[in-house]
Length: 193
Image (tube, rainbow, N blue to C red; front, side):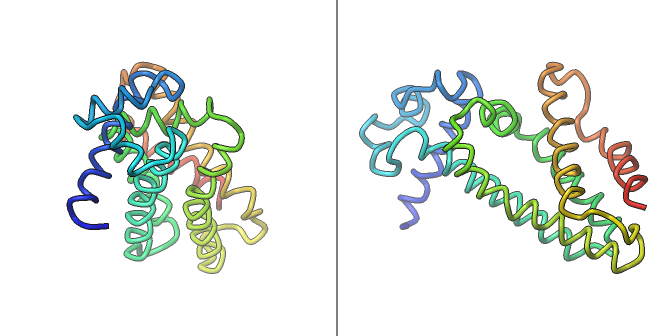
């Protein structure tokens, strides 16, 4: 994709993120997204097949960026415990700083069709795999207990962080999400040891 096309693609994605966060997926018409992006309705279709394609692209692009951040921080971690902390910090901090992304990933995903959720689930899979790798590393380092059910635990960690973000949004963001990192990590580590 040329630089100019990539800029327009990103502009449309950012507009879609804002519109979907404000109106919900079902209340977000292509015309609203086009207006927010300051492009003609037809321009959207040069980049995306339909609204579902926009949502899938949003997840691929934005979660792809987050997963890249997770991977970098895990590589720099001194231990599996440190990696769990960094994953949680990034998860909470990034979503706290991008509330529109938090709304779309936490609220709208759950209201989408099963097929759409499956497509988006493929984007989340590398994140779940990363958590699994950290858990395996922790067992090998003898920091985490050897009888750990890694497949179940990776989902519990992801689900726990996911629920903390959802509760923060539902509460009206009345407190700092990133301030929840220490207690969340402490809870995870107690269960892992």
